[in-house]
Image (cartoon, rainbow, N blue to C red; front, top):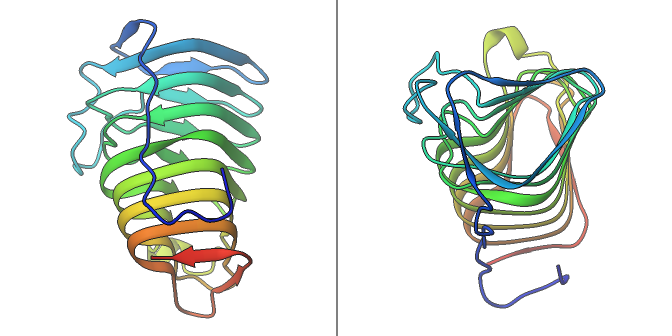
Length: 213
């Protein structure tokens, strides 16, 4: 993606090569890589894709697992769980459910793809990470990346890095409210996003080339 654009970008999700109905979470084993070859995963019985707690993930990546070339369709249920040392390449979310990604261990890299229609969060961090997002487009969201704001995580030093990211129509690109947390942004462009980094309690941000429209 170019460094600067005057007009909002649009998330263009590829046409799925096929649909796969998912009735229980697909577990990607330790160290396993799975290329879904452009398939769309459609949850059935895992959750309605609302903000209701207790929904189940469509995919769960165990430590060292990676996935590529897939679309999470509607309803998004609770998206993808990442235990740590995970890579997601060209992963799209048509209509984010409870969350798109839940970070349970680090590092997690999401490179290529994007998400839209997140009533609340796209990426929920329940672990310090780091979470690294590259070459992503986010549309219509509350918070794109959120460090867990509960009392349990008030001292968790979340680490977030976003590179070559475009975002349209959202509340906060990043929200971090715990001691020691840090967000790094470079080559980021937003349109109609209220806050780049919403931070408190000593959380910090480093911003390179960033444009806000």
